[in-house]
Length: 358
Image (cartoon, rainbow, N blue to C red; front, side, top):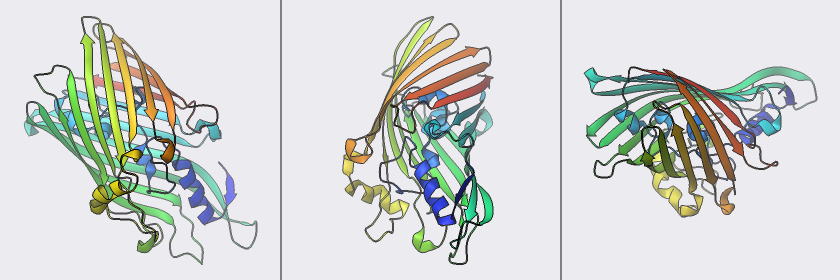
């Protein structure tokens, strides 16, 4: 994406690209760094992005850190996708790396992830004419570390801490107080409940991206993080020696409150005040299913559906996925079918994983 634009226009274009992320509420510019809401792995993306109530792999650091308390052994996974393929921009891509490890000595599971979104290279012109005054590469990344433990046998608690860096437009001008570079931190807290009385049931809750606003230019223009509340149910419908079928349901809502004067509430206010803006109509719903064949698990097929209210974005699309496992290795892919005019349509994710010691 070698585009010639001014610095303010560059920030606007990047924001527009990011607004197409599937987990965002519809209003453009509701939050900064919406890349934090992109579904990070192929497996759950193939199930309509519904994983909060059942997730059982390293991607729990995103969907429900509390679920990591129920996992043993080690796992590392890497996901890659060419983001927004309808735009045909080869240098617009997303990568995500996960790791988890059970450590009995500390009574829980540690985890880590690195998320990177590359937005391409831009040429920058001044306000006086077409002369190029510089170029920049636009990107964002987040580094997350987490810990999860069982508070009691049926109840897992997980927390994450995250460093976020956003470099949308490193070049400023004489008229601007700052540039398009910012860093901040955020935290997540999540629970997973798996009642022994109902075998195969999981109930999850995840409150993510709690933290201070992102300041690119000055504090008065700071943008909130995409604080997000996810609730999920998972149920293992059946399992025998060679077959299993997992069902999942998620409901999520962005907890960001923009005011009429252009300011926004701090995150600790917005988790309450945001409900007054759109209420339950802004809730996004996800459903999915995963079928496994083999002993041990060998081949998986997945399907899901993503629904957003017509009032707030009207995104509705099907997801499909498949996976294979051999010994300690695994491969997954997922596909979004959203219609020819949707920027997410034909998005394909690829994930590789290694799990051992479980």
